[in-house]
Structures are given as C-alpha cells and as structure tokens.
Length: 282
Length: 207
Image 1 (cartoon, each protein chain N blue to C red):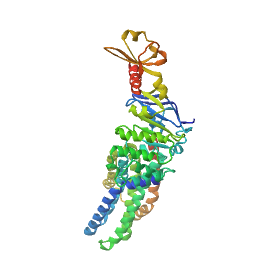
Image 2 (image 1 turned 180 degrees about the horizontal axis):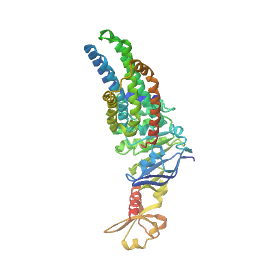
Image 3 (image 1 turned 120 degrees about the vertical axis):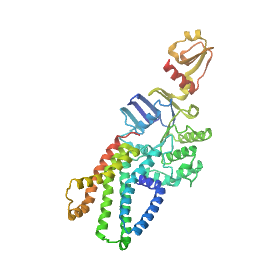
Image 4 (image 1 turned 90 degrees about the horizontal axis):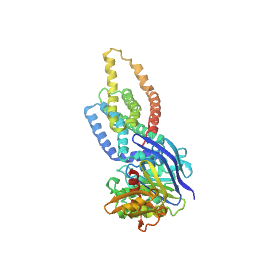
C-alpha cells in the first residue's frame, strides 16, 4: 500500500505557538481523522501541506513527491475543502464550472453537474443565496470533479446538520472505494470521525499526541472506574489521564498494562481526547 | 490565468452594468457641456479602482487561499490582476476614443491630435499609477491601500504645484508631444518592474 501523504519532522514557529515535529502517514485507501482542540494546530498543518504557509523545517510528501518542488503537478490531484465556500458570492454553479475548467486540466463538467444534481444545488441562484450546507456541498462537489486522489478537508463539516454530515461521510466512503484514493479530514466533531475514519491523528498544542489506526486505538484504551485506594495501586505509566469525583476515580488507561480490574469500560474517541488533554495538564 | 481572469470578470458583472450607466451619463454630460475632458478623468479613476474592487472581492471570500490550493501558481495570481487591469484600461481607452471622435464635431475648438494625445496621456498615466500602486495593494491589502491610492493621486498635483511655485519653466510643446508618444515604452518598463516587485511580495505572503 502506497502512502498518499507523508509528513516528517514538520516545524513551524510563531510567537506563542509552534508546530513541533509533526509526523503523519496516510496510506492510500483510507480516511484519516485529524482531531484536536481549536488552536491545536490543525489548520496550520493543513496550510503547510498546501504550501499556503512556509514551513521552517521538515518534509512533506504527497503521492511520494515533494509538496513544494512538484507543487503544480500534485495539486492537480488534490481536492481541498475549507471551512467556508471560497467562490465569489455573485457566481452561479455554471459559472464556477467554467472557471474551474480553466484551472484544473482534468476538470469534468459532467461529474460536477452530477454532484450538483445529487446535492440538489440550485442552478440559477447566486452562491450568496445558498445555505451553509449548500455552500459546503458545492465546495465538496468542486473538490471531487477533477479526478483528485487526495481530499483534504478543514473543518468542512462543522456547522452542518447531522443529515448533511451523514451524506458527506457517505461520499468519503464511496471515494475511498478506489484503493488509490485517500481522505484527510480535520474536525472536532468526533462522532463523525468515529463512524468513518480508519486512522486517527490527535494534535495537542502543536504536537502529535498519537496517530494510529482507529480500531487499535479503541481496543488499546479503556476507562477504569475504581476507588481512590485502588487508583493509588495502579501503575501510573498505564494511566493517560484521570478525573476524580466523590465516588472515586475515572481514568483513561492502556488496557494491557492494567491487570485484575474487572470494570474497564469501552473508551470512546471523545474520552481518549478529553483524558489525554487532561493528563497533559495533570 | 484564463480561469482567474474569467472569475474576476464574472464577479464584476454587477459593477459592469453600473459602469455602463455611468458611461451613458457622462457622455450626455459631455455633450451638454460641450467638453469631453471629464470622460478622461472618469476613465483614470475607474481603471485604478478596478484592481481594488477585484481584490476586495477576493479578500471577502478568501479566494486566494483556495486558488493557491489548486494548480494555480502564486505568480499567475499576481500577473492575472495586472493583465485584467491593462485589458480594462485599453478597452476603456478605445471606448473613450470612439466617443470622443463621435462628439468631436459638437465640441468647440476641438483638435483631433490634441484629443487623442490627451486620451493617450490619460491612459498611460493611469497605467503608471497602477504600476506604482499595485505592489502596495499586494503588500498592505485593500483597506490600507485605499489611502495610499489617494496619496498617489495627489502626487501629480503636488509636482505640478511645485513646478509652478519654483518657477521652473515648462518644457516646450514639442518635448511634451514626444514624451506623450514615448510614454507607452516608459509605462511598459515601469509595469514590468512593478510586476516583479509584486510577485516578490506575494511569494512571501502566507494565507
């Protein structure tokens, strides 16, 4: 399996925030959920991938090619959706198709038209009259109509209702049916990611906390519920974060390093994220 | 490049209608006052406002971020703005020439050569302002650049005022005429320098 996206030791420093030694590997045929709080570095990472920001150091390879040296060629095969619609709001669907036809060498009017129909986007309305859901669908349609092999989405599903989000997730799943394709999606709506992602990458304060297969992650972690005294006896290297209350302790633990406790519950992605952030502060 | 220019033209549609309306108004006005000089000034202001209009439209929809995520190169974004402005300028100049020629018989003391030279001068002057202004526009963005543009407008007035104050004798008519004919070459050189400076600025930008 070829890697669609490889990021090695990526660094970008700002005053008060820096992205440090980011490593991410996205194999083809899969969807990666890129999660983290607001301001954790998700958008910065995505902008570095797209060379919208200039990196300080590190390496980014897309389809095995350097993202700066082979920029033009790579971008022919990337579809990008940002958190808002970037087309001028006085344009109509047909006009967008005409413009994009001059921008991507493999732009396909028919594919775009099919998506526009599928999403029931109004043909004779200007974009400014579109709802937020329609605008996002329009951006996604545009991202999928030039034979892209990698879709990159930055918070594209936030602010959308569950029905629309579900439709969009279906499109991702359909897209990766072609084994050469991959999706890299940043979001903080964890339930969506839990449904479709194969890999989860969690970024916190500019550093990657973990980046691994979702199933492995959900299998490895568990929520231990125990009393204070029991918690004291637990090997702390297995604890990733905990929360104390009147009844005892809830802790995110690595299952295979904890023995003898019966009540280790299934951890959700949200548990893993919240406890990891908490563990960082403890 | 074609895609970017097409996009700008499409998003300027609305302003286009307004522009046409203004044109009709000023033609009638020129006819009524028997003086076409206002047409030239209007041309100059409109042409220099155009890049501001398209860039402010881009800023609003964060178009650059998107465009640069497609195969469009940074250089192309910059050059396309220049090309659009120059195309607009030349078109405006052509329209104004035609209008002037039509109105010529109705204007008092009209002189064909002088009219054409004035228009050519206005056209080149506008392009010159563009050449000076565009790098500022790319560097500082739309909001701040509006003030810079005003300062650039004021520059010729200041210079002519200074010449008058210091009693520097005006160059003779023949020199001015040859300057007008040479102006396209001078303007072209300045535009080329300007494009390079703008590309340099834009390459350093982060989105």
